[in-house]
Image 1 (cartoon, rainbow, N blue to C red):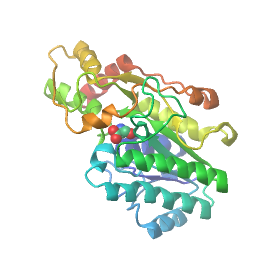
Image 2: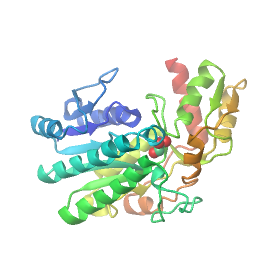
Image 3: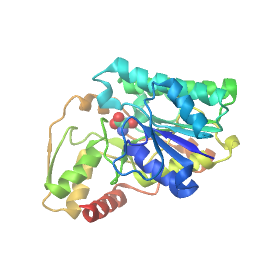
Length: 310
Ligand code: SER
């Protein structure tokens, strides 16, 4: 069952590739990206997601039967070049979906996000089927992507599965170009400098999830029988909600001299247009999703793992 992971050197891709290799075997998981991994854990191929011919070659050469399509530009970086972001995020997905149809790929995973929500969306809690009017090109591309996934399932029977990830926090890979990146950076700075200047305001609450839970959500969703997966656009999945102030207070329990300053930049407006709290009842009902990590457990684990690594 060779699996292809695109965007495999990103924050989620790095860990997902490793998790899939632990389950299915190192050689069964082909990692791909435009950047080489710093520490490769198995087979890797260079892939620019806009090079459609190359995607076909890789899929044929490795007899790929499943694709986890993670390659994308995130919310904050996306705003510097909207057209490029749309091209990579949406046209990249369309190439994968069309290839999956033509090549009869058995399963496709597409990560969506809380960035699909906008100012017209109820924020607290945010239900599954709510009005969406995203404020960023990243959110627009993921909202459109969700609809394309739904369409390919309805029209062609493609087995495509999709989660709306909250901000993801992990110790083993760097976040890059997102609005929730502060929640990873803060740990590195707290441990190395004892201080952090946050680009979001103190009380900006956002939905977050620990990497372990994000991996489990992804793998559990992908392993369930197809008939249980009733939604083919993005399932809401909740971890916990927190503000930078909540996180700083929790970190201070472990590092008493930790100091935080707030200097909100353009990412503040992006964060304010998103959800505060996710209602994931449908994921719970359809495929039994339940997060394990809350703010306290996540913080303790991050500090323990990063202290060990430093
Ligand atoms: N973590 C992402 C971002 O901040 C949201 O999906 O862009």
